[in-house]
Image (tube, rainbow, N blue to C red; front, side, top):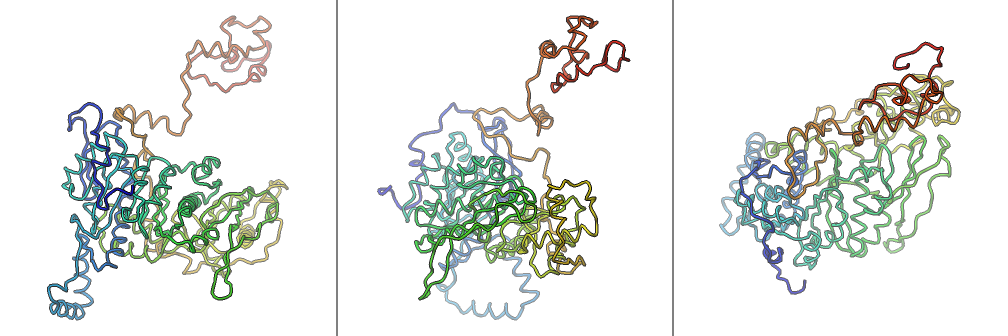
Length: 632
């Protein structure tokens, strides 16, 4: 690593001097051309290189974020970026509202000498002081090519993949889009490539990781290969693990226990941020989140990475454990560390005191589950999010999913930044078995009580508030009095009975307030995405020589989705297996079916269920009883 050059990586060196293995195939054989953004990509019809059109929102948002990051980074060097479509929009705004100011600026610019003109960076041009970008898992190279054709201020983009077929496809797509001067194909293990660029002068300004599944194997190398203050973009599609279905697996990958809760999507974001910060701390580095998104079937985080031993000491106080009641779902956070002021303006770090809860829940008497650690600080930099939102709103034709980006970012700007996790309307109402109040009614009750409340982009009916859980249950007790629950149907040990047996100390006011309806909701923005297409979830993993997904495969996916796949059973085998549960008449030797008897007395077909029990045949009527359907 010490002997490597400080310039752009050499594609041949990164490929270890090898050519793509395997037999040569016709380039145009069985290929599909896809146009997304400003890029045109050729994909093999076979499942050899992974591509999911549903993640166009992910790629559009990434281009918007990197553009604003380039504006910040190059602006500090005196370089202005030129984004297609922005100049014309700004002219219209100036001509309508600031004509006199525009004339003054024109006069000032006319007086400038040619050497005093500001430097600019345009799309598709090499900027010598621009951003060095790495896409570690490029597949077809779509994302890298879109960076080259849509993001200004780039020095080079390395499109890396470990698959020889994928790199061959990247080369052809780079030539197809005329971006060979910016995009450099690379065949290497993404981890080794990043480890080879740990030296400060060789680090990348932007690293994008979008793997199939978990990015955990790449995070350690990524936090070392990103430059000081650089941008790290990470996607996680293993939501089943992050959402609490396998807590032990989540711990092995991310170093935290995930809990099953209604706030699982935000908890997933905070677990990923915790894992990134933990890995960065090993090298005296720390992360600062810019934007954290939960969308569709994945989570996406954008963080900046800095170095500083003093700031690393504060990382423990940014993490927290979660105590969650298994009965009513109330949760409490316990910080891992404590940062307090000391004499002389110093900061003293110590262990936090806890726990914040008793062995049993104070509301319903159930036990608590322990989850985490997770990131307990804000998920977003609201100033940065505001710049991205402003740029996308001013130039909506730049991205196909600009409407959705605008809606999601608007909700994010309305979120309470200092309130981790949230409750949901259906969670609160189902716990006490009452009807569900409207979103405006619950928000108004919290506002009348003097608490702050907001939505969450991660859940449509979320209630993010700084009110304690006791205040929330008081509001639900007051709501239950307006819509009474039949107490005789409740078990005395159920959470609903214990919660409703206590008189509320807070008298809730459900009168609708004007400020209870958030601005994004009033404007009717596209805040939460509906299913974009049929079978829109994660696609199958790319495999060498993969078969094309034809109509028969699509029909099979439609029929078998969300169903347990069990091997087909031969009717004769099924009858023999059912013979192990003989009916009473067969035991007595009086069954008319003889050796063909099976306990159900129904014809042996492939539709016979396999969930019957011996009790079914033992309950069959005797010889003197009337025969029912399917009974001799």
